Structure formats: C-alpha cells, structure tokens
Length: 561
Image (cartoon, rainbow, N blue to C red; front, side):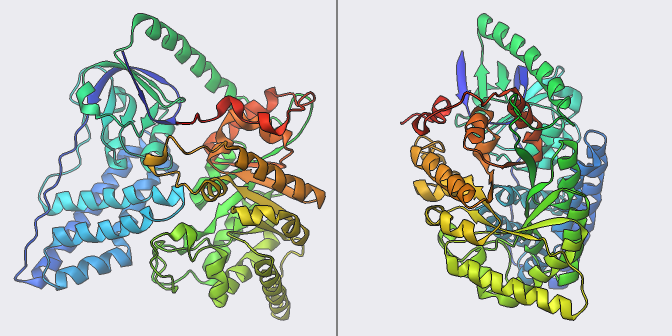
C-alpha cells in the first residue's frame, strides 16, 4: 500500500483503477515563411476552425454540466479573438515567423502574465489560455479534431495525469470516470471547477510520477487530498464506509439552504460570497450567500487595450448589486499590479510584484482611472446596498486621500443631477502586518475592515504559498497570524466597526469555531464552500468557549519540518 499526499480540490471518495492519461506533446516548428500574406490567411483559417471546435466542446459540456460552467469554452473563443493575442500573433507572422510558433509564443506570453499575478483565481486562468491555443495549434498542424472519448478502458477509472486542461476534462466520457488525480493544477483552475461541478473527487499537486501507478487499484480522498494506491482490505473497508458517509453529508448540506447561519446558542455570523465574475452570481445564490462579501473588480480591467469606460463599469456593478436586493454587496476597487495585462497603465514589470506597485498604490498614481471607477460605483449604489473596499492600504494618508476623492466625486454627481446612495460604506483590506498594527487608527476612519488571510499570512511569514519548496515551512496557523487576526478584530470592535475575513484558511471548517470565538462579523467564502461552513456554524456552541489565544487552531496546525 502506498499513500500519496496532494491537495484536494473536489470532495468525495472514489475507488477504482488508475488510468494514466498522457496527452501527446505538440512539436512546434520554427521556420521563416516566404509569403506573409499566405501565412496570415492560414492562421485566420485555423482560427475559424478552432472556434468551431470550441463550439462543439461547449455543446458537449452542456450535456454534462450546466450552461454556467460550460461558458468556460465560450471564454476560450474570446481568448483566441482577444485583440492582444491576435496582435502578438500577427506581428510575429509579419516578421516572417510561422503561424504555429507565433501562436505558441503569444499564448506563452499571456499565460506567463496571468501566472505572475498574486491571486489564485487569476493565476488559474493561464491554463485557459494554453488550452485555447493548444486547440488552434492542433489544427494548424493538421492533428485532427476534438476527441470525445479519451479513455481506452472498459470499466470506469480514476484518470491520472501530469496535468489536465479543461477541454481534456470535459471530453472524457462521463460513464468512464470516477475521479481525477494530477501532478499539477490549482484550486481555482477550470479543470478543478469542472470536477466539482461534475461531482467527481479530485486531488492535485501529487509529487510522485503518476504513470508508474497506472492500472493499479487506488482510493481518492478528495477532502483530505490523499491518494492510496494498492490499498489493503482494512483500508478498503474503511473507505467504503467513508464514501457512504460522504454521500449522506452532501445530502445534509443541501438541506442548509434557507437556514440561518447561527450557532446552537444563537450567535450569528454572516456568510457571504467571494466572486470575480458576473457569472458567479447564480452560483453564490444557489449556495445561499447572504450577499457579496467581495467582488474582485480587477478582472474587468485585465487584458484589454484600454480600461472599461464609466458606463461599462456602471452596468457591471449595477447588475451585481441588483442581484442581491436588500443584501450587502462589497466591491473592491481594482487591485491592479504588474503582469495583469493592463498595458494602458504605467505599471513596470517587477521581479516581485507582490511587494511592488499594486492595489491602491496604482489607483492613487492614476487619479482619473481611479475617479472613473469611483463614479461608476457611486452611480450604481442607487440600486441597492453597496460597500466599497480599498485593497493594499498601508497608511492613514492613503485613506485620507481616498475620502477626499470620494467627496469630490459625490459633489460632481450632484452637480450633474446624478442620483446615488448617501449610505455607501467604505472599508479597507487588512493584508499587511503594517495595516494590522495600525488597525486601531484605520478603523476610526472607515466603516468596516476586511482581513485578507492569504496576503496577511504571506507577508507575515515572508513565504509564497504557491512555492512548493516551502510546503513544509508554510504555516497558515502560525501564532503570529493568530495574534494579528485577534488584534484587528478587537481594534475594529473597540471602534464599533465590523470585520469580515476571507482567504483560503477560512474555508477550513476546523477553524470555524475559532473565527466565531474571535467574534468576526462575516466570513467571505467561494460559493462552493458556503454550505459546508454554514453546517459547521450550526453545530457549534460557543457559550462555553473561553479558549485562550495560544490554544487556537492547535488541532490543525501544520507541523514543523
């Protein structure tokens, strides 16, 4: 028996044979073309064929998952049509490069830009660029059309692979699938999203080469991120029982919809959604979100020739706010930064963008860009309950500047006869130790605080959570993090302000009680985690908590190496 440890991205238990899927690697030719016009025509013809194939994949996806999830492949078409992508390819061909090399280099450049972004959601988008380009490259090299039956096996199997692109994931015959195991991947990749939507257990980031285990019986534990190869009789019996319990648990979670998010002793905490796209609204509603605790607006600004104008932004913000009548919607101002595809702003390429020119720093250096977003937000505020959130604040001077700008924006809208709400709340993201330490001063000047645990942990520990070399050292439940979180919440409450908390760790139900004991007012979660945390909240009794600070999170501490 062999136990492999990775990261679970889709819950559940799967038991079956491992089938190693190895995608053929395209050999990208490199040569100088004689006729540029003919090569451009070949590229554009290939583009049209690729778009048709993506439409076929979309239709295939609609039969397996919802249209909301299938829209991934319509997005792939938009990637191929993206003006930046087309410009890179055409410019390379005009320099006499062959179409295959031009497409490959353009997709690599754009994927690298997304990969450099210090946000899990946007990092995961690099695979979508690669996927769309791969389909176009297959056509340019006459490799045929989309294969809708990629598994050469009679019985259902667990698909193992170095990595899987979304088009691979959706192209497997569903009745042949038990789950997925990969060496690469991320929590927010569309492959992981599709696995969750299809209800298939999935574990990523396994370090051992999976090809050597092909054909062996295995167990996937998608919750613990564990793969057991060649399990013994006792382990099989244990996991058969665990699989039955998991099915019952999923049925129980569905029953949480409509129930209040309060503990057994009636302590209430708001559970809101963390989203980045309008398409996520329905998912948030389906999982009983009590509003939007964070809308990451920067996606509107990325990979464009120019920033969206005020009306385009206004329509987007209005749509989100109107989707949650009577409920709070928190929209963060654009968290711009190096490598996010915003060439229209003067953002230098940086070796370490996480510590560079980003967030509110860029907004303040580009005042008209910032004012346009503020005007759009205030105009949209008339349609519901809006809160505005400022990312990457580290000084009181930044808050003072923003408040003066907001005053000017409001006066300008009044002069134009534009209506807006006078009850817009202003909040700050606490994501650096500096902001945490002065959170007493900050909370006096704003209406609420939001703790970004991902960045607070990263900056406090001086560790990139995506760096696999640091896996044994990265401790999200480090005592310093506990003390900073407590400090922030206590400071806010001393000034009668509310505190929200979001990030990867808050989706861990093992620390939900600790968050409740600290008296956080809101937990902001990806939609898929809302019902799980609600169920945990409802089974907790905090009336006899009284835990001391040093005992917090001990049950889930990552051990020292």
